[in-house]
Structures are given as C-alpha cells and as structure tokens.
Image 1 (tube, rainbow, N blue to C red):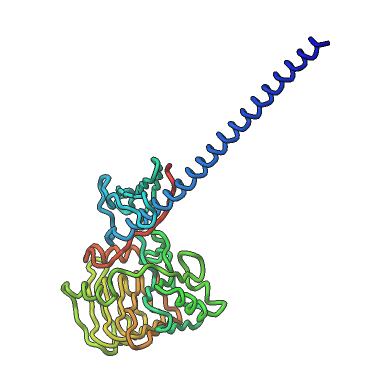
Image 2 (cartoon, rainbow, N blue to C red):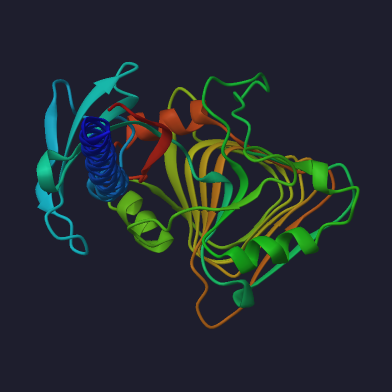
Length: 357
C-alpha cells in the first residue's frame, strides 16, 4: 500500500509538471503572438503614413512643374529632392520625372521613406490639359450668367476647326475657380439647357480648376509684347479677316466691340472692353475679354478657348444664346502655342495614380 501511494505521488508530480509546462508554453506563445500583432499593426500604420507622404510628393511636384505645352524630362530627372515631411517626424519624400507619349505626358515616381526602414513608392501619370471652353476666374458674387434658347453649344470635348473630334482629352465646358460659381452657373440653366454644356465630368460640364499662376490680363499683356494689330473699339458690320490658320495673328481691340458682320480670324483676339458678337463671326484660337461683358448670339463660333479677365469692381456678365457655339479645340490652340510658345500656361494635371510597392 505504501508503494502504491508513493507511485501515485510520483504520477501526480509528473502531471503537475506537464500541465505547468503546457501553461508556460501557451503563455509564451500568447505573448509572442501579441508582440507580432503589435509589430504588424505598427508596420501597417507606418506604411499607411508613408503612402500619404508619397502622395504629398506627387502634389508637391505638380505645384512646381512649369506650365507649358509639353514636358522637358527626356531622361529621369529629379523634380523634388529629399524633403522632410513637415507634420510627421522621420518621414521624407523625393520625386523624379521622365517623359512619355511624345513629351505630352510625364511619369512621376514619388518615394517616401520613414522610420524602421519603411518605404512606399507611388507612380503618377501627368499630362497637359486645357482649362475649358470658357474660363471664368473669380468669385460667384462677381458673375452673372445667362443662357437663352436650346440651340447654343459650349463644349469641352476636343473639336477640330472643321467640326470633327479632336485627339485631346475632354476638358470642362465652363471652368471656374470657385465652387459657388459652379453652382450659380448650373442654377442659371433651365432643365433642357443642361445638355448644351458638355465636356469632362458629364453634363452640364461646369467644374472647378486650379487658378493659373498669372491673371488673364497678365497673359494678355504677354501676348501684346509681341507684334500685333490694334483696332479701335466700335461696330464691325462688314467682312474682314483677322488672321488665318496658316498665318495666325494677335489682334487687339482697344475698347468695346460689337461684331455683326461676317468676320473670320485665327490666333489671339484680345478685347480690352466688352465684346458682343451678333453675326457670323468665326474664330480659331484664343479669345481674351478684359471688359465686363461677353455676349454671343447669332451663328458666332469660336474654336479654341475664351478667357474672361478676373472681375474688378464691376460684375462680369456672360450671355450665350441663339446658335452660338464655343468649342474647346486643341488644334486651334496648338497653332497659338506654336506661334507664341510658353505664353499660354497649361498646368500639369494628374491623369492616373498607383502604388508601386
């Protein structure tokens, strides 16, 4: 009996040791996996932060790339050197660029580095995109827009001067720098007029774009530093030619202008005052209105872009009616850019974005 009790005590001791060993193993494993989980969570957090930093590098690059018709990165070029991210300690980014698509687009590579060897790389594709068929800078409180009838057209879809579809990406039908103005323009349309303003983003195509580095008047002055033709303000009721597609010119009207004849032109038309077009006016290129009113009716057609100067003390008025049409045309604007390069700012636009690793 004594031997049996001793044997039982021995077995019990072995069982206790075995159970304690299992508990210690489970506890250690639990602590190990807890540590791994914390490390995994930490890595995920720093990785997410690094991705945000890499995206900031892309935005920084978009802000410093010069405006112009093409890109100048024939080989991999550093656009942004290593730059510390201001609100996250230990993070930095750098950006390189290289051209693609015959220099009309560029590929940006933004690399973000962070603590503990964290690294994220983002690749972004950027291109040159026009502003819109009509560019209206300034606040909604300074504008009044009016549309009459259902036959007018304002199109941000790229259109060649012969009316065929152009090769460029669609831009806004009306581009503004104020979201409140977007709302105001849309509210001024009747239900059956919304489809008359087409382009990027659906109908009505009225969108906010980034403000240009120069004012519209400054852009006009840059063109006027080149040889140009000055015409007095007044009524233009006859026939006339203000430049051709093969030989575009810069035409300046030094006051208010009312055009009611059959006039064609190409290049750049700058009107220092108000512009009212009633007749069969056709223009290929850039029209800049520095006065306080643009009115188009009749069969007037502009292929290219119309820019209104920033409002001053008076309200800007834009009226489009009748069979008038304003069509964004990269073809017409390419003739302008070829004749007077680097004057019309074409800022870079983000086309696509992806995380590389």
